[in-house]
Amino acid sequence: MQAETATLTSTVSGAQGQTLRYLANGELVLAVPVTSDPFVHEQPATRLPNEGPLGTFWRVELHDGEVRTVIGNPVFLAAP
Image 1 (cartoon, rainbow, N blue to C red):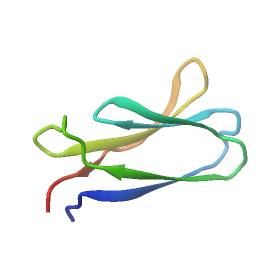
Image 2: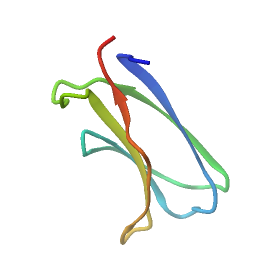
Image 3: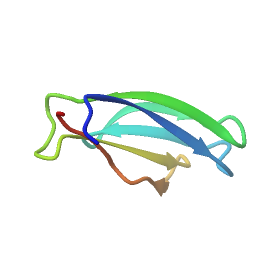
Image 4: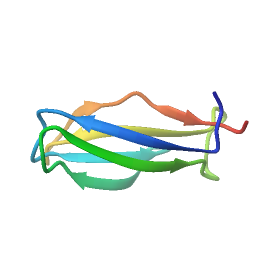
């Protein structure tokens, strides 16, 4: 399915105290403290002008303050 926009919904378990990070095309867009277990957060995602040949890719990761602890699979937004 191709789309210009989407909503990324992240549900995190066992990571209270870490930071949920949203990246678009490898650049940090938003960092959100994980304050509960489970933790749910929604982030709007859009296509960006600096996208690659497959479209804009968004990724979610967890960070414990020193290193990434989880790296999510990318979600690509491409023109319909």
